[in-house]
Picture (cartoon, one colour):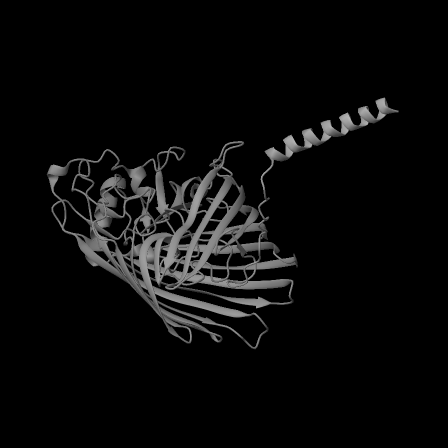
Length: 495
């Protein structure tokens, strides 16, 4: 009996000693768990970052789409490159998959809300990405504080609908479109009752200075190896980039009234035109003097229409002199157009329409002659039911080189391509289309869009014997207006 008691006491002592040793390794008090809390200050979807007074919202969308007879998914109608040439090098159907991710943080301070916003996309597109490649895009990255915006955001000049008053694509011309952001420092003053005024300095690259093509042309093409018929007939002028570096950013102002009935906005911008050198490859050849262009915009949006709840009409009109990209806008380098079609002229291989829109043109030893443009665009957006909606949209754009600038450009074109053609480089573009959307469940939308584009150019007659592209044969081409149809199907899930 004594032996059994001794064994039991010894075992109990061993357990007590072991437990005491383990207890010595534990913290004296466990920390309280911090749970994520809903932040209701800034709308649905915000949460407090644990341990802070900053609210954060994660959002975005996933989009899958296909464009038909386009030059970049749903981005650009078939008015340039292989799409404009209408040959076997064109991808008749261009697919795109895109994941968009946004991060929105906000903190209440004694100066008001401090906000940061970041929007990035991962995209795969037919014709530009490899099997498992794709590309990364940065749409927005800005800080807002006490009325100021610092970073990459929509231009102060732009309307809330940018280039899409009702369409799903981004190349409805006739006005401004900075839907993926412009680097800027801007200030907005709120006066109450939806009235505000903004002032901004904005980086002209790349929305205001076309990337991939020069923003100002030396039409004599002095010293350029690219001053060939091919470069002229591609709408790129004499070849070479005559655009100088930025000296003064664009200065932009806006007044806006945004109320329950709709929106009214007036914007204005000043834009510096700078050429590099008369021979862009030789700085000793001199350069033309800098000039200043400008653009103005008026926009109107009407809500609460008698046609149905949620229906809207969006309209805007823009005029530019020496600031052509405020009218010939878009998210691609679209200020050169070269479209081919059939011809009935004996001896001509095909017909061709050109549309080129630099800020200005000059000749060696001369000054810059500015180009002017104006455009209008709009859409009527109608909701048939909570699940079905249709938009009808359109735009009209006119580009005018002026008497002196037009004569200079035509002389340069004639020296490069020869021929008996007459006219000016002026042109007009008309676009009209419709899109229907089906939203079977919240935040999931299927869209189908069709758009017609007509390029009405002023040249008529025949070129000399030229080779306009690598795939086109050497021959005679007829200058003639061209048109094209573009289609798109999209499915998009927002979150």
